[in-house]
Length: 592
Image 1 (cartoon, rainbow, N blue to C red):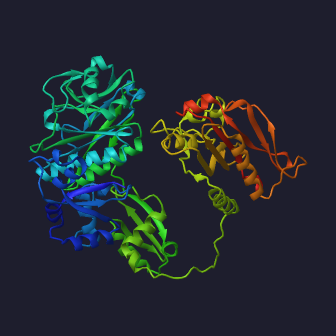
Image 2 (cartoon, rainbow, N blue to C red; image 1 turned 90 degrees about the horizontal axis):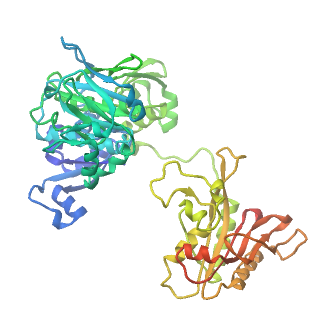
């Protein structure tokens, strides 16, 4: 959930009144938001970076930090937040966003070259005419772009925004993809020109921009936007050009957004222009930009500023929330949430969704807005119409009983992550084929979380490695799920509840581990037997265990439950250990 920090004086300016801390906290709650904390620029920096980072430019003015729902992009700036709440308080009407008339010279154009298809294939644009910025609105404009980049733009991987002073550049613009050595320009806040290759080196140590370099760094071509005279406007998603830098004196703003996800680009552009068109000479008016795809000849106009119509029934909304509102009452509440609602027929509402509310996708979203406007505190609590009694799942009840007995026997329980690295379940366990049975994470953010674990042993061995300073012996167990592929399941995988234990000491302690297994079987009311009614162990070869010191565990009806033995020295050393280790792991689900 993103947090927006806004100075108290700026809030008062946009709300056109002064709220006390308590009043504003209650106002946020009424609108479904939360005032997270009240701080200052100086205090926030001191808290995050220490007293050494505090400088004279920081002040002690109150800053209100407000938690915003992740899908409410229209609330990410003070302009959108104040507008939405003032509409909610019925202090102002909902604005109507419209397109400006095309200038005599025609609309600005962005010509998309075919080479861009291999790197960032989409681009959208818009123009805000006769804008008047002051220091606060200019800072808010820059901050909104950063907030969008971190949220819906997914750190510029899906969308990258560029804003330019249109009076310093000329259209038509060209969106190209060129080799890094062929791109040369003066980047934002720099004093000399660099090639794209040199910029990658320059920004590799920049705390803000280095995170975005990998997005295009491995590509043979980089995206770049030129104006009519060959001036580089931006090299998305890295940096804009210094030539077209906007300032407090900027009157006409050219906005472009390149993307790998076209729908996200629509949302981002609509959000920026609807929030900041209020500073135009003709408020809430936006000039469109024509995007021309050179290869196909297709022409598209942006922004869309689409007003969508939806139809919902009041009985359906009332049922979802648990209230009984009349048609006109529900329409009034929805109008407070910036939605234009009217009664089209008895029990039916026609709702017009403005371009600021891209979070409205379904009747459930309408119900949520009705609930917020009605006030969740005003809902009357009542008993459910049907009575039910909660019962634990049999597998969970069994495992809870086992945990108590294992702990009573002197073993310590560990709770590890369900995700691990590929090496943890394959190379380190000497199981090269294990990855074929593992569920892989599509876009892992860290090497530690690449696959869903197929064994509990890696987690236990890591826990041992983190507790090597504890006195020997170390006796750990874990009773949790592993995830394995299963084509017969709807999702292609299933959970399997397993019990694993490790005994770490100067000797492998196979007899200790076997005693652990015997105790567990007695708790499960399974006796040693080879007639299909009990369990037994049988010599086996498993790469994870030392040759000749491994056995498979056969359960009732001849089911293979798991393995027991002394771990192979290579497995032990791969997890950073130096002493022998005995281990057992088996499936407990057959005992239900």
